[in-house]
Length: 75
Image (cartoon, rainbow, N blue to C red; front, side, top):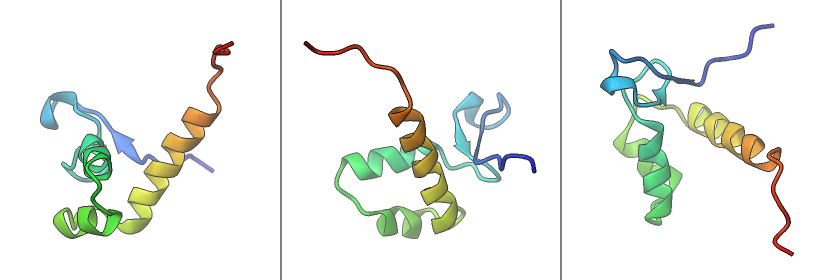
């Protein structure tokens, strides 16, 4: 089974900014909302083109990517 495309990047859509696939909503916008203390629901209310399921899948993918990276010890 092919992996679902959650994020896309095209020079024809917002100059290549990564967006939620099928939308023109930048993934960075979700990150910014969360950094500023807004909730996922607030983001979804402001960007109805993105479903809750889609946003959660993107966040999970980002988490998985972050947690599988190899990091140098701080010691």
